[in-house]
Image (cartoon, rainbow, N blue to C red; front, side, top):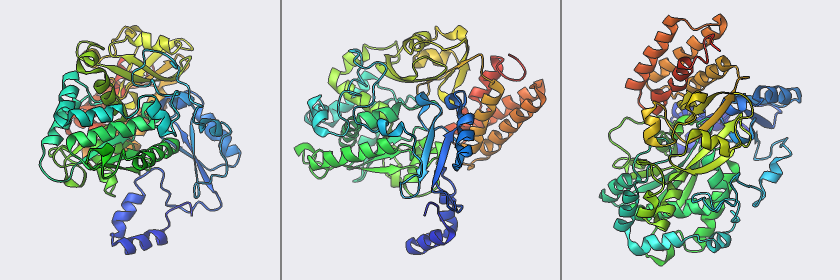
Length: 526
């Protein structure tokens, strides 16, 4: 039908015995759900208006599609930042009325090539563009499932000891120690536990997990299986954003082949232990990248974060102990087990171990996904991507929830400790470049609009703060300047959101805005 009609929604509520108000709340929460009759229009073209796409012609793309008679929805990041400007075509029954010509090429199993393709230094991405992502045989020919066999052989305690000794930190933004998380879940009593791959990367500028899921899906499945067996879970979940149809298909295919081969199911690799994986698709909600909001979504509700404590390690999915990791973190588990904790920890900076993935986009010669050891200079990562394409004005680190830095900070070390000392964050590995042609007033207003739109509205500081922040910046564009009083108001709201918001969205919603003010990027300064 192409939309969720009132009659259809009421019918579902009657069948499932769900209150209509609750179902309507879910239906209107997600960006990809439609609750208005689309008429004769079979497709909706979602055009990204965020950061990288915004400075690469997204507005012109939307206008061109409308001139062609397409139905256009101007929305948030689609995770295709290296190919900006991006659009996501959503059709009825999976059959859009118009598909861009380049899409067919992107679906070919061997079509993707990393900018670093063939580099012997790759540890996380070394199979991308090398193995056939649709073939378990190809994956095993390149060493696949050796680490699962090793994990089964050495046992739970040894796996956790290795990950802890390697000091593997989470790659989703919070950098929480993976070994601590896995040990906490493993030590919890009870028959049911869960592991979740958080693949809902919706941070503007981020696309790293899309690449590994679409082009190395068996590695994600293998690593999640290791996580499940290690913490004692029999159920694993991959929560993937709805805007990633190719990655979703590849993961589903990998799970089916693994199950057929006895690598999932009632007797994983002959170990006598049960573990299986289910894929759940999101429907367009940035907030569902927060782990407890993600769990609410899997359970069938609006993606609204939970108060902590209790924490997911004790009361997670369905109220049971749960370990949540993003795909990049899981792939690092394979690297730790392959190399050993000592060799793994020997790479990187003083307090940040291993390799890190960076999504480089914007005004750069070779946008794409890059892998480097922790501790590389920001300028070196940018040069790896071919350098800026114009006169560099600013770099956004960490995405919309991150901070702008100036060209004078290209010596900044890309490590957790160095960025923390500099008052910025690596976040999910976003590096977006902007040259002097950018209208930063427009860009920063859009960042504020993004947080206003993506706030779940559950807590007052975030619900009100993101709206007022956006209003102040819109007022700034009308006046052409940002007064001292208005800057103070933004600072006050930032403190309130950081102190009192339930989750990280409110905590970080003012970061990019305040850094843009500090650097003189907005408010009349150029």
